[in-house]
Length: 149
Image (cartoon, rainbow, N blue to C red; front, side):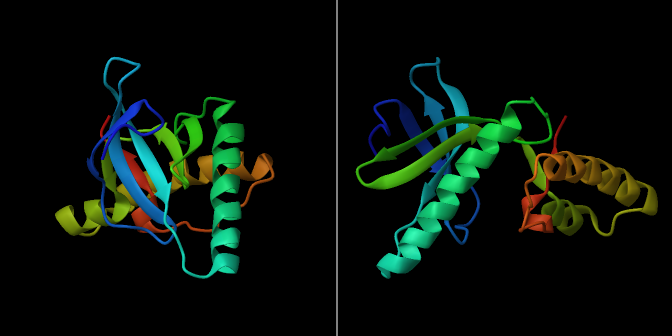
């Protein structure tokens, strides 16, 4: 794959494809190789379905932009949103860590204390998101990333 948007070099796919598309690890050739997660909206055969998915993808970018204005470190920052060769992409902060599902699969069931710590942080983030009049409709262990730090 060549440079996306004449700027981002895709290194490899991150995880498995999701319902809306694929996520890649990419480096920014303008920013000295700084790495980002880039989501690419997949194409759908049904034009009406694609239009709805495209609308949701654009909304995700707008929501990330809005939430990022307040620098909440628990929500990945949006850096770019663009179209390249007919495909839509969004560029966001690369979060280093494991998903909640991966953590449980690697280490087994969480202790009650660890569960309460994770839920406490997650509820603070959801409170912030809801105060911004946004509803997260896809909370699940695969979408909760526990930062390595």
